[in-house]
Image 1: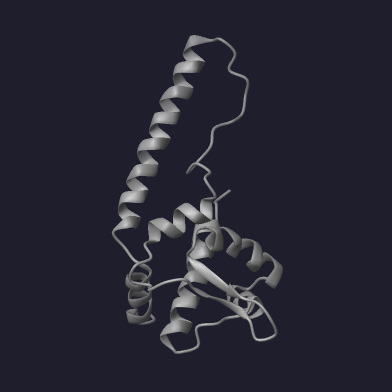
Image 2 (image 1 turned 90 degrees about the vertical axis):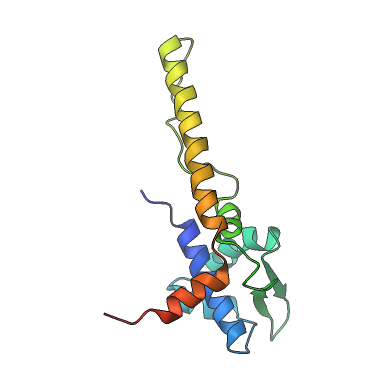
Length: 144
């Protein structure tokens, strides 16, 4: 099953960046839920790690909501990715008991190294793109 945390977090961050661009930086979780096709409580759970990472800010109260914590040109997609995965690896192996079988241990070590290399490659690609770059690319796209 595909992990949708990053893509959903990116959609939320792009919505917040677009709202800021339009001059209405505060967006409620209900508004985000409507745009993302989900309920506000799920949106709040999705936003929690982004808040903890310092990427968004919350304003409480009747007219509250969430907004970007900084300039979209300074928020990298790598930061969003790292926050949305909550420290979990790109992929995980089966939690089977490997015991003391040397081949099984080596396979697990190999798999761990491969995962680390893939994560570093993904982080490298995403660190070269900012939220502003992504928003610009999305706004510049013409429908087919």
